[in-house]
Length: 146
Image (cartoon, rainbow, N blue to C red; front, side, top):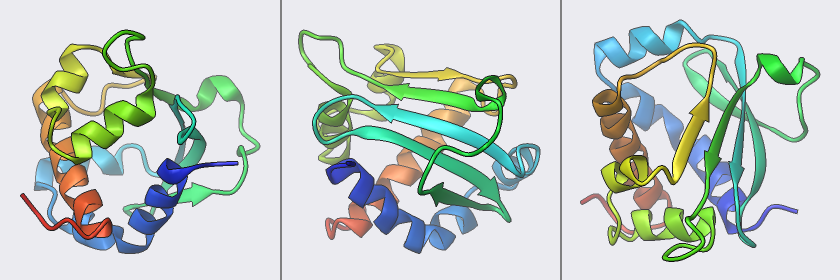
């Protein structure tokens, strides 16, 4: 059963139009290349879980169960800690949302890893999209924008 992270993603799903509308034209164009693709996000820790998404119609759709598609065809993402400063990915995500850890630090410390058949964003583009996503998550959680 998904914990707090799953609840956050469900709340984000209902509000995501604002997030996608604020992306740059280049980012929207790159996202169009992955239309109808499936992804698995694994967030380690007691409040985390394994989540499946499909990108369709310029929106992420959170699936209730693993899609019936070959596992190797799914993009896979992992949010995990280092076992020392961050025991798990849910703690990394909570610190990023509270702004005590930057998205760029998450990427540089390899707390977030991607296994995909195509590179959608370069590191800077991904960091910018991640920051916009986190702004939207703060709004979902009632914290306002930074």
